[in-house]
Image: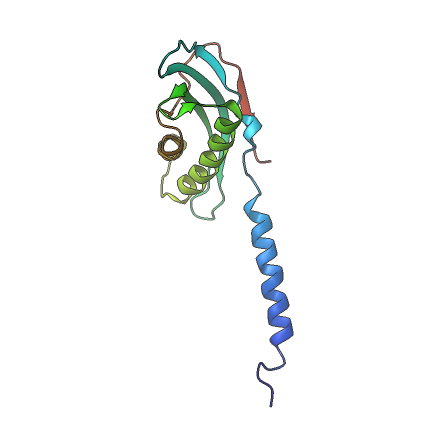
Length: 157
């Protein structure tokens, strides 16, 4: 008597390969932390909270769909305090948290039923802002506002 049947090894192998492919696909299109280059725009003056730094990134969002394909270049400005009530906000930590928030926000925004690139970018910025503010109190995400900041571009192509 066979407990699992003759398909057991094939099914297990298929599951393992499928799981490995899903894990591999999760990294496709992720935005590297170095995309977010922060520049000081308001110097920090001790004591207390203060200072302000920003990063400006143009991010390409693409929804692949037979019925509602959509592509949008989103201008995203991330603003952070130099020092908040939790202490100094290091650029490396800010870059990593911004990249994580952008990846999550892209997944969220691309699942929304929006019909225009402007609505897609608005959904992306709103979600990214809420995610980032959760990890870095005082963080803001907007369209480009600050003048003279070097901009980076991210396209998953």
